[in-house]
Amino acid sequence: MNSKPIIIVAGEPNSVFLEIFFKSILTHRYKSPLIIIASKKLLEQQMKKLGFFFEINTINKSFKEFNLLDNKKINLIDIEYKFNSCFEKISSKSNNYIKNSFELALKFIKQNKLSKFINGPISKKSFLNGKTLGITEYLAKKTNQTNKVVMLIFNEKLSVSPLTTHLALKDVHKKISKQKIYQHVKLITKFYKKKFNKKPKIAITGLNPHCESNFKNSEEEAIIMPAIKQLKLKKFKVNGPFPADTIFNKLHLKNYDVVIGMYHDQVLSPMKALFNFDAINITLGLPFIRVSPDHGPNASMLGKNLSDPKSLINALKFLDN
Image 1 (cartoon, one colour):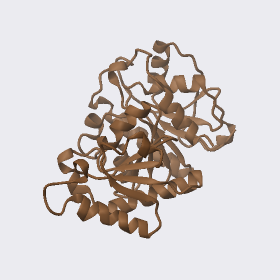
Image 2 (tube, rainbow, N blue to C red; image 1 turned 45 degrees about the horizontal axis):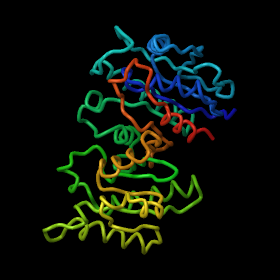
Image 3 (tube, rainbow, N blue to C red; image 1 turned 180 degrees about the horizontal axis):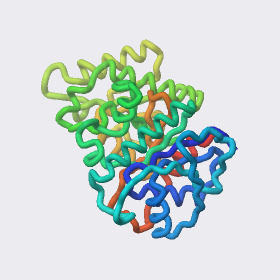
C-alpha cells in the first residue's frame, strides 16, 4: 500500500457526502490510505441509518505512522460536532465544525508534507456567507495563494475551466484580464504536462454572444484576442475566441482537451449535460493537489441512500497513485 495518505474533509455535515463516501469505499479498493476528518458520532449515526457497516480506526492529529494504515477500517480524525439528528437542515450551526475541519486538514498536510486532499461539499450561502466566492478561493486565501489558483473541472475526454468562478454575471466583465487568461493557460498546461506528459490543446470562449458586441472595444477585441495572440507566440496550444453556443459541438470538441470559459455556467452547464457526475473539480496552484466531487451538498437527497458516488470514486482514483 502507498504510505502517503489521501486526506479527506467531509465538509457540510448535512450533505450526502458521507453516504457517497461509504459507497466509494464499499465498491472500490484504494492503494493509498484514506484519512477522513469528520465527527465520529455523526459518521457512526449516518452509517447506521443508511445501512453501512465499517469499523473505525480513530487516530489523533499528531499521527505520522502512515505506513501502518490500511483501508480495512475507516481511518478517522474526530472533530467535535453537536447535533440533534444526523440528518438536519443546513444552517450556520455547522460553520465552526467545517472551519475546524479545514484548518486541521491544512495543518496536518503541511506538517507531514502531504500532497493529496479531497473535500466534501459545503453550503456557500451558509459557510462562506459572502466572505469568499467558493472553496477554491477559500483554500487559496488559507494557503496565501489568493488570485493564483485555477478551477479545472476534469474529465479524460474533455475538461473545462471558468476564468471567473462563483461570481454574479453582472460582475464578470470586470474580472476578465489578459493576465488572468495567461495564468489559466499556463497552470493548465503545466498540470497536463506533469500528469499526462502532454501539451493540452485549449479552446477559449468569448464573453459576448457570437463573440460580437454592438459597442466599440469589446472584451474579445480588447482582452481575449490579444491574450490568445500572445500565448500563441509563447507556443501554447490555444485557439479562439469561440462562441460559447458552438464550441461544445462534437466536431469542435474532438480537437481540444480543455475549454476555458469566461464565467462559471458558460462551461459548467454544458460539461454537466455531457458527463453528468463523471467529472472532478481540481484546484491548480495550491501547495497540494486538491480535488472535490463535482456536486454540492444535495440536501434534498439527504438520508435517502440514492446518491451517485461516481464523482467521489473518480476523485479518489485520480489521487490514488
